[in-house]
Image (cartoon, rainbow, N blue to C red; front, side, top):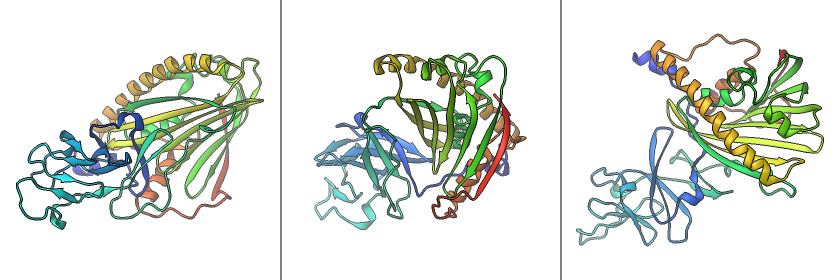
Amino acid sequence: MSHAAAERARIAYPRAYWYVACEARTLSRRPIGRTLLGTPLVLFRNEDGAPVALLDRCAHRNVALSAGCVVDGQIECAYHGWRYDGAGRCRRVPALAAEADHKGRSVPAFAAVEQQGYVWVFVDPEQPPPHGPFRFPHLESAGYASARFASQAPATLHATIENMLDVPHTAFLHRGLFRSGPKRAITAIVRRFADRVEAEYVGEPRPSGLIGRLLAPRGGTVEHVDRFLLPSIAQVEYRLGESHLVITNAATPVDDFETRFVSVASFRLPLPAVLVRAALTPLARHIFRQDARILRLQSEAVRRFGGETYVSTDVDLLGPHVWRLLKQAEQGAVGAQCAEPELEKRVELHV
């Protein structure tokens, strides 16, 4: 693929944002390596147990620091034993009699925060975060239970998010789980804001598949909203009477064609939480496998033909707006948050 084609295929990387690096429970006494937006990082805990994120490269001979170990809350390189603190400053050079701390021996440090069971990293070492990471809704709400999942998609950030928010594909790729049987006409209202976009589905009957029956055993008309929030949050929300299900996916691009994500399903349903979790876990794994297979085929075609161009119609409700917001965020051109949408339109669908 030519350089021009590679640039067309590459998806926007908004760097001045928080992304999930790992589950907090996986970060213990040993360092781990993670790649976020093409940047290799080493994660470890300092002497206070707080997470630390540094560029995964020793300033001495370029060895990955994640291959070393943690000593007294500092990361020690496996090659010559150089040690770095949580700010990336070199604190020890075993073979050197003089002071170890020197500007030329430091490595870039990234802001890291542990929150709601995840370690988030702000992927821009040049500026301080203007606010904290995204918070998953209802994890601490009374009356709600939750289930957590993690997976990886062989696709671009944009394609992964678009797939998560794409209603029409569920009747075919996930036939029997979501929608099946005769199509019904509904209205989708698309609203785009400066930092997010959402689609509200009006008059949607309870999905006829297995997941619909789990959500609302007695049937009815659901309140259904899909939304994207910068930089990489894809959220699906269903309400029907007292039933409420919110599935929030936080995606982290590893590189151009690999995206890692964590999913949190918070729910209040007329079924025991243990039963819902037991049903959701195998369903989620099955859906992730199906999505990964189709996204791999999509990525192979993008590589083969050079570029992520495709024919878009009105039923591609959120994808084009997600792309626009990602590009604006990458360029630092996102407007101020506002309660009123900058765009609102209605689209007729058959689901």
